[in-house]
Image 1 (spheres, rainbow, N blue to C red):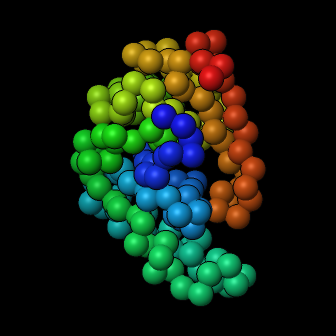
Image 2: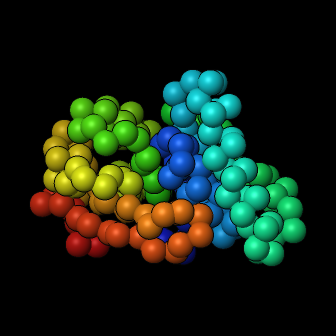
Length: 164
């Protein structure tokens, strides 16, 4: 899969970083599946996306948020979020055990050559990928803040990350 062929991506988590990322990727024309663990998380996540949209409107980037919202789908079903998706931005807590659990969930559904980018700010990729079936596809993709306004991403690989 070529990166330019990707039309749908997924978010795992949509707090401050994930909600901002969801809005940004949708602004750029991508469909975004947002996976969260509960219906309550969906309700807590929507204002994070709206905050980014409101900023886009304030600065004249868009007139309204309808197009952005039309490309974002929230779900608590990992199969719906990750099946057939070739790029996931993981936005979970800075906890290695939690990251291992998140990778395990994603790997049940993602194609083998899908990329998992973690927004980790302190956990090395090698630790995040330690229990992964496909550690070669895991990277850190940590944003500058706010993720929806600053198009700067720190990208780091680990010991087993593929050069490709």
